[in-house]
Structure formats: structure tokens, C-alpha cells
Length: 279
Image (tube, rainbow, N blue to C red):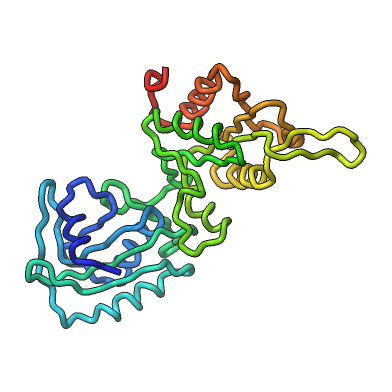
């Protein structure tokens, strides 16, 4: 639902990142580009008939008779995968603005075979590799709540956002859809904790193992964001996959030395972080 008060609040907040303002732009191709860029980045709003200035905003009165439905329908024809949107003509301070609410897509939305995202409230075309969010770190975990919380607090001390799947809204999605939507990050930490036991068929002894979902998500993230951007923290004598070469495993020791090792991996991955924040 698009609400006048919400739009005014975002316009008045000079630090709002989830809004894209245009004075007057209703060409379907450009509208499609704006929608795709927002869907690839975050849930947010496109406001036609507004100018967002450094400390305030300015509204441009647009005609109520314009064929807004036709523009949106023409814009939607640009997509192979349809992003989820709402749109509405609003009257704010006695001036008409056209607002499109765009929901974050868990799949990449291409427009004219190009990938766009939002940076600093402007549309940018992604060149080469996909831009990953290096302000967030995705955490894969099992049943060890202590290890999960310790890792998350370490990430937050570095000034980053720890993404823990069960803390994110479901929005009617399956688990794999939630993983797809929330894993557009620059780095992931996978916690191998002794939550399960198992053995080979011809071996008598049971060995500690991580949860099956942890192993699955580890492989998924390596495929999505790259092996060098995924690190596994291993707590105790947990069995690890032995046929994956080049995967980084760090011993989650009780003295906390793992934090510096993990910091180095994240730094090498391209994160702008400062070791003094946790030393």
C-alpha cells in the first residue's frame, strides 16, 4: 500500500536511500529501467513529479489525465521476469505526483539485457561482475545459538549488518527464495558446528557433523558470490566435505583468534573495515 505520509517522510529525510525522484519522466523504457534498478537493490519508491534536494524537496504538479496505466503496462513489456510493483497518483501538498512502489526481487531483473542498480539515489549500470553489497555479511548457521550470536556481534562491531535468515521477513517465500533474496552480499560466513552426527556406511564410529542445510547453503553461496567470498568457521572436531579444494576453513577457537583470521579474509574480499573496532 502506498501511503502519503510514508512518501512525505522519505522525501523529508535527506539520508533516505530507497527513493528515486524524477521531475517529469514517463517514457516506458526509462520507467522500466528505474523499476529494474530499484528491484535489484532494495524495496523503495520511484516518485515522478518531485525533485529531492540536499535539505528539502520540491514538488512539480503533473496532470491527472495522463495515461499512467498505459505507461506502466508498456514498461512491464521490457521484462522477462516481472518485478512486483504497486503504483498510485497521490496528492501531496495540493500537487499531483505519480508514485511507484517497487519490491526487492530475489532474482536479477534485466532491462534491455542490461543490469541496473541504485547507488546514492541514482541509477547505475552494472559492468562486468554483479555489484554485491559490502555493508552486509550473510551468516549460515545450525542449532548453535551461541556461535551464531558471537559471529553476528563480531560482524556488527566492524560496522556491518549481519544477515541471519530467520530474522528476515518471510513474505510468503520458500526457504530457497529467502536465501536467494537475502544473499546479495559481498561475503558470507558459514558456521560448521557439531549439531548432527553421522558416519559412512562401513565405519562404526559416529562423527560430529554440521546440519545438512548448512552444507547446502555453503555450496550455494560459493556458486553465487564466489569461493573467495565465503568462509567457514569450524567449531570443534566437525567433519568437513573433503572433496572441495580451495575452500577456506577457520578454526573457531575459544580464545577468539578466529576473529583476526576472519577479518583478514573479509579485508581481502574488498570490505572497508578497521581491525581496531574489535581489538
